[in-house]
Image (cartoon, rainbow, N blue to C red):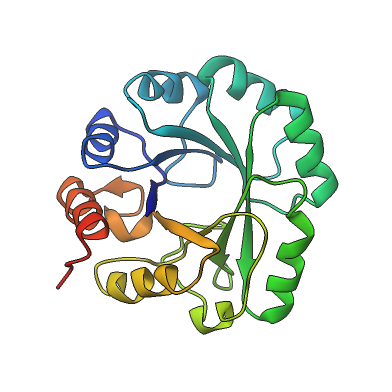
Length: 217
């Protein structure tokens, strides 16, 4: 079970995610997000990541900004969370020589069919819910899509399940992951926060422990 804690922005949140077994640590570079960090801030936090994979999360970023992020932070992976098409994903992968996670918004089976078009260019997929009407954020909105849509979804690359995963629905999310061979883990962000962009240290520790032990009440 791989667990990605996304939207980290403080040394304390990085430390608790690292020490409690997160496989991936996500740092968001999107000015509209309450979880936004600068490349310099991310580089300082990245130095504390230990053995966890660090992921630079961007939204329709241009090459110049990606150049700065990669040069300054030196992430292990890039996550493209905007409207990037397969050609753009391939171009980013080739430019930086880094594995790419492509995040996709899901509402119906057509969205899952579109996800298959990224299989030859992305290292992993991350399936999130479509943002609520009026939201400026492509992710981190605290909403889930209908996970029943994933029945029979069997891409050739690993998939993270994301979108509104929290204490309230963690048991269900874990069951969904374990019931589908393509799903390798969960992406947690708003569900481990006390306010938008403010990570709850105790909640990160509790949910990571539950994911590892599968004994969440």
